[in-house]
Image 1 (tube, rainbow, N blue to C red):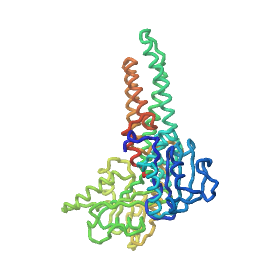
Image 2 (cartoon, rainbow, N blue to C red):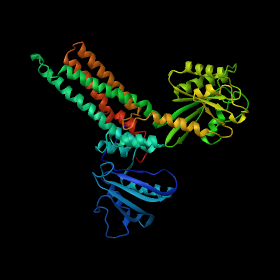
Image 3 (spheres, rainbow, N blue to C red):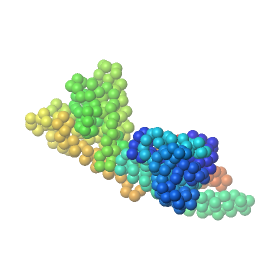
Image 4 (cartoon, one colour):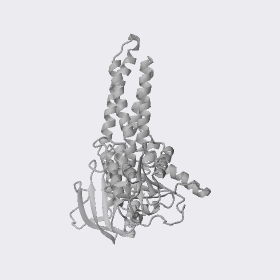
Amino acid sequence: MNPALFNINDTICALSTPAGSGAIGIIRLSGPDSLAYCRKFFTSVNSQTDLGNVPSHTVHFGRFSDGDQLIDEVLVTVFRNPHSYTGQDIIEISCHGSVFIQQKILELLLTSGARLAEPGEFTLRAFLNGKFDLSQAEAVADLIASNSEASHRLAMSQMRGGFSLKIGELRARLVDFASLIELELDFSEEDVEFADRTELFRLLDTIKAEIESLKSSFALGNVMKHGIPVAIAGKPNVGKSTLLNALLNEERAIVSEIPGTTRDTIEDTISIQGVTFRFIDTAGLRHSEDIIENIGIGRTYEKMNQASVVLYVFDITTTTEKEIDEAIADIRTQLEDSEKQIIPVANKTDMLMTAPHSFKKLVELDTLFVSAKRNENINLITERLLKSAHSGETGDQTIVYSLRHFEALTKAALSIESIEKAFAEGIPSDLIAIDIRQALYHLGSITGEVTTDELLGNIFGKFCIGK
């Protein structure tokens, strides 16, 4: 999608509900001729009602016809500019969910002069008409795609402008001092300094700290949006696949007594109390001469590094205290983050005849005792995972969850560091002004104060058609 190729004054239309049969379908128009195109085919049950004269935000019942052929009885909702989603006149036609009816209405609108909307074009128009900034527009797509309470909360906060406000404050501070630096350039021959260097250093430290705070929230925001990855690791035949099935409450993984059955990773997600977890069943950790199995073991370590939490599962009836210590230590050596949480899970408690000799040590390790086969104490795992998830929450702090925003913040932080270094080395103000403008550019790219057609096309092209 290239926004430069589309005329914002075209009247566009699209089906805004999922394709296929359903109870109702909603067809949306936006543009200066929306009312005119709909009036060609719509007749209100109240013969005195003319869509051209009705007030905004009103709903009208009537017939949608092609000449003498009645297509459907519909509800038409009118939103007049500028008080609409796109800032233009918008018509929403609610019809019965027949595929034929939906396509026929679209066909009639197209023959009148409307054109089919591109993916995200309604929201693009809202952005271009100042109804949203760019980060808020992106949050619309994230809100539609949210599948948990956590991801919904993130998208809703960004759509309401919390993140935009934070970026706006940062840019405003930089703009003030950029103005003073630019003013110095106008009086360069008089060797005048309008910007207090001590105050500027203090400001830059504050801005850099706030940017770093936003950047550091990305790790949390990313898992809240996409789900917290949890790797299930351990030796073969300790019940990892059985545990995955118990956690998901379905037969997702093949369970077998043959060691090495799981040779690749199996992933699935589940929402627990509004938090999405992405469980990853991995190949058993052992020395093997099987090339394929070794590839799977290599992927196990990759997934453990990608995971936020590792469930180390072992057979409580056969595993010794020494083996547990060695296994956890070995996993630690393979992890890039030495502080990553590893939760020991003692499985097959249903097969225990007496308490294990290593019980005291297992309690010290905060081990969870379960029977995946009998689905016993599985709630202990979910409770521990929820506790870990909630411990990472930051209250009302603004959380970054978009990779694009994270990259822009990273570039802005580098520009700030360049400014600090330039001042420390006594570099002339005209060169420092370049770095300040770069920092402003990167922050502005987040909210859309600085855009390119390529950027807009990449963002809105990922939207669904009709939004």
